[in-house]
Image 1 (cartoon, rainbow, N blue to C red):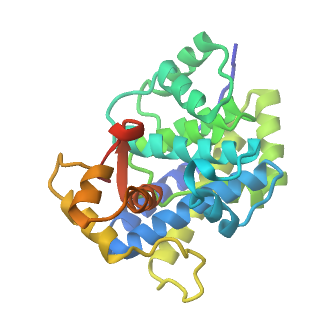
Image 2: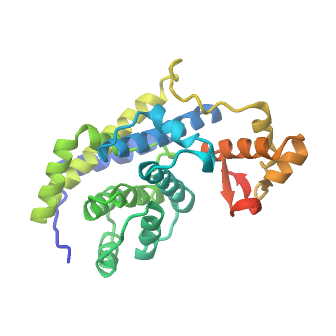
Image 3: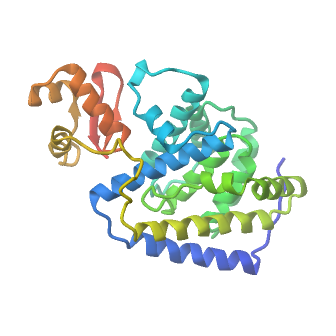
Amino acid sequence: MIIFSYNLSPTLEISLKKIDKLKSQILLVPLSPLNYHRLVWSATLSHLSGWAQLSNQPLSPQAIEQILLGPGDNRTSTPFIKKALDYRRALDHIWYEWTANPKSPTTLDLKQLANILGVSFHHEEEVTSLLGYVQTGPVHPAIQSAILHLYFYPSRLAYLASLLILYKSGFDLNRLLAMENYWNEHKTDYLKVLQSATRLGQITLWLEFYCTALVNQMDSLLSRLSQPAPSNHPLSGWQLSDRQKSILSLIEIPGSTITNQKVQSHFRVSQVTASRDLAKLSTLNFVIPHGHGRSTSYSLA
């Protein structure tokens, strides 16, 4: 059974106020569609490269990009690449299912997330009790997120269960918030505070550390949003062809979808070309796939 206590220290209260203020400032920054997709793609690479570092298998954003943009089922498969792709799938699941979702997450929801990640899930009754505790009363989402992170560590679920709470509460910051690199860059302090909180059950210092990290990443994001993308930006895969842009135009009407066969027919291209276009649009989060195999359809993200 998990037992812990904390108090709203002055340091924690100041951080929570900064988090709320930064959220408002970030969401008011105007972004062009092109720049927005570049930033989302950059955040995705940051999630995955940071996670890889934390897993002691460092990969650069460029290497992660090659994995994500690889040739589908024909890509070289290793256990680590599978974990990376599962992590990406879990990120997409959180975005699609939990962004601004008014529902309170349940043990079953977190178990589903664990299954996507390919990690074990234990102590279901304990998790149910924990969720009931953190979701009772006016507990700030940052504190809820920090508590779930602490509980599930060292599982990969720690990073994404905590992210789920932020997404459902509007703190995803338009999918631009990524914390994994911060944990890696401050790994010594991160592990020290985590282990102390786990051992002692007094988690105030952990909450302060977590919220300070949030403030840091949000402040950094706000600074980046005001800067033009550098000319040597590593995001080589985000450019779209005229045909790919036209595919997006075909599904602008809410509720409309497109399939591989429709792309072939409309643009008079081969199945391979249609598949390549749709795979790229899906990888870069321009469209959302529904179904599997030949029955797969795509809607605008």
